[in-house]
Image (tube, rainbow, N blue to C red; front, side, top):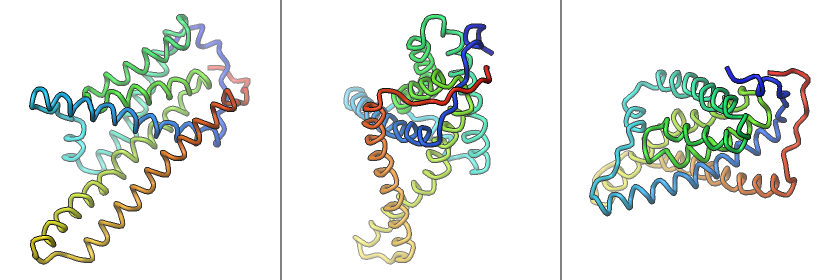
Length: 227
């Protein structure tokens, strides 16, 4: 996969520190993109009275956990990175890395097939494209993509259930009905831990952006091996 020009470019090793920093930057980009998508969908709803459906979210909630793990955490990151990063960026590198990253990011956004995910997928795709053009090694973007999908599916689903159960029990408490107090506290704890984790990663991402901006560029160790 790729072109002769891309094949001539040396691979670079991405240090664990830089991998973590870029992953945290990705959290900020996804949060920003998700905010834009939410505002746009609310605007469409206010104008048309109909919110575009998030098909992927619906499929995830109706699919067995083991199958979600196989498809979302293993298969999707490998296939999408080979197509959107390895294939598209390698073939468009002749027009410059900026053009290649842009087309790769937009293709990645369109691949998700809905407005809910388009904007954060484009921003995340731009970051993954940057990582790939810096390293010319698709394994880094695959790993990062796998972690993001794991958190957005396997981890987020129990949290979403805990959120739903929490508010159902809260409503019961408000009308004086009996509810499982232990489950109520457990669900509250799950929500608190997850939200703190999310806020912590966003704060870390802001720090990472500042750090990477001040350092001007990510320092990569060159590897003699070529693609």
